Image (cartoon, rainbow, N blue to C red):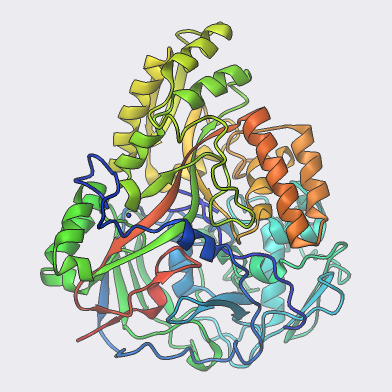
Length: 599
């Protein structure tokens, strides 16, 4: 999954249950005795299996948040406008944060005050039942679940929601369920090329809805991870009616969560209001404490951080769903007596990586030269030092099951500022000294600062860097084009659950390449594709984790499609009148579903 300008994923391990950051002025980024940044221990905790909840776990209402009261409007400072509102197109983390408030699917994650997370039934009565180790999964819908227009949600709506993801206009969302049902890579689209819009459907032997309350998934191979996949925003319910306006649905969706969209001005603002048809008795994971959210866009991290540190006027009632504390202001936030009490932090699952477009950079020596040249340590300092992340040696985060600490084939831990001489040598051997390198980066404060450091390092290594600035709101949409016109560009990917199967196949399997695909480097390596197919059939999580790691090593060392840069952490600030603020280990940001105003 892509994080906030990284693509998003989740921290959970396949667990088939039967039935059931001290920053020193942001110039050093080095640790001090007062450093309380997240550590490997925190990351490892997120790599543990998330259990599948029972019907009791899935029954609402959600446990009350201590001290919570109703009423008022929360002010939200966001950097980017929402590029997608169609849930099937939602894969970037800021969109997922919004989806938690306005959409519902068959399953979701429920977190208690101690941070313990359980996967539970959302619209369904439980997390799913299977009697054949995951080849068949049955879901039963709860009573009194409705869309925001008052229409009851039925199995026909859930079937429609899955089938529309086969349509050509759905390009940016997850593909797991479609692939499991109808074929690997992009071949699944052949099963229903027009989606359900011309009257055709998947056969009952694949997806069955015998009555208004029941949905049954039939797979050729066991898919024990289905309950986790269904919890993704992409599988949220869409009505089987004329209100599904296909590609136009992306700007005018029908909501099903505790809140609904009252007004949206793309690039400017969004207002959320209560959904009167949301019944708390049907929802074990969300609340509806405030009357609404007033969201405005174009707030860089420096702007939102200054407002929230000042804690004046509307800022007392404010948060940012996904903006972090601006790195140069981290020390101020930590030392300020008021602000330091209003911080939320967590270890995220994202790996920032420099993708190298293999359609354009075919020689591995050049890709290796880029990797050795990158100043990883400097980039981490720009992102907040120990509170913003850690130098990455590989492409799997510490939150992934089976993570190998210390893996660092390109010596980035020993040489955090890069090895320009080694890079120069490789470039000379490739006969490409002075090679033009088109480098795309997004128009945010941090990415702009990174671009200066990266350009300097690559030029020193013998490249001729041509920088191209791209709008952050449409970053992944533009980088996801097969013919994007760029040589190198950074993205952040995190597991959709803490299994490497949600990192390697979507990011490095050549059979998935299409516009909107997460294979940003356009790696087309037959060994990788063959291994993805083989390992995906291993049902033992421990054995699969070992095999995924072996394939990970091959990808990093033998192919090198993307240079690992850093593993990310999050530090966020909120206003003094905000209650219920906590880190959500599903969203990997502040939890919007528990917030209330103290007065």
